[in-house]
View (tube, rainbow, N blue to C red):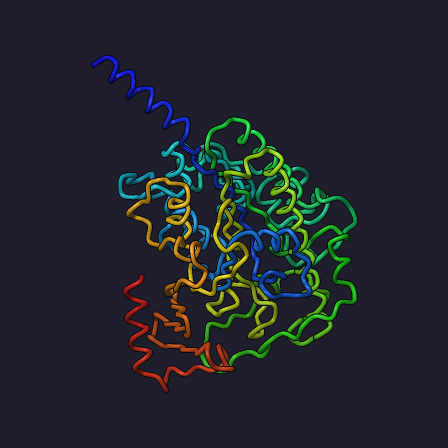
Length: 467
């Protein structure tokens, strides 16, 4: 009997030694990043590091966020559930956690933390860089996602506070009055003259510590650019000097009732008296500065991935690159996000892990941000929560031709559903409907709701069921 017990213990020990360690997660969140990347078809954009990850992993070419603003989009990413529509979505959830903790399901980082992972965030992962509230976003008594992070960090440098860094320009310039801050800027100097340089450096430091600790980790690093104002070191502007930009599709303000808005966030910055909606030369200038910010962000992604490889943890780490929503660069005469048009909801998503099948093959399946929580559970072997509302992307990761599903998004007074072929937008106050056919040349420039009442009824039912 004793020999049998010894044998069982020995076999169990051998099995434990033979079992592969749990996969780590490296989540890279990039603010205001539309699919303006070479890997997603923007040939004039220099994004070699993200493009290389797309060649190794699975680029999702029809990934949609669940809200066209930073806060509510990140809320769905980090909780796996639909939430409030405003930028305070996670803080509202935190208040509910304090009031009735048992009624609120764990967040994604909390879930991984309770399953043995060290969870770390650096930069803008939730809405506030560093994940705290208060006037300067650094109040330790006001945590944006309670119980989520083993540590949550925001290096501020010359910008002094997270709120200062969020809208910072070179050498510590912070936004006191938006009208007195330039819309874009290109200043000579190293990467650290803008806040993202510090975020990337701290992220790399944390990556080294986590890899050395030998415990599974969930590391999220959030880069701020290309968020407004469009500031990046001058060297990132060089690839765009004199480059011919493609024309902006459907730049006219849409007719009738739509999800259009007047680009208030963009227009409040100092624009030197110019308006890209009426000034084609200025429009191109703005687009070049946006592209420079994308290349700046791409450089940090490359540095982080190089650091991951240097630690050796790359052999056992899932890497996700995620844009928190899209951004209009003049389409529909909008400069910004916050609409429910395609441009504000369509963002890049790339998932990579060692051994992925069909590396580099894109998928055109319609998917949504909500799907990442169950996907990462599937890929790590962590128990998949029943409360997560998304669908795992494992089918598309195994087979890029696998079908997707509908994608829901919302604002305070409107909701939209994207199918493989159509987008419906329902205005909740008066029931007005926009319906767009993405198989037609007009796409989201022609509302066909009145001509397709049966399809409207069907899609409204699907939308309500999904919510």
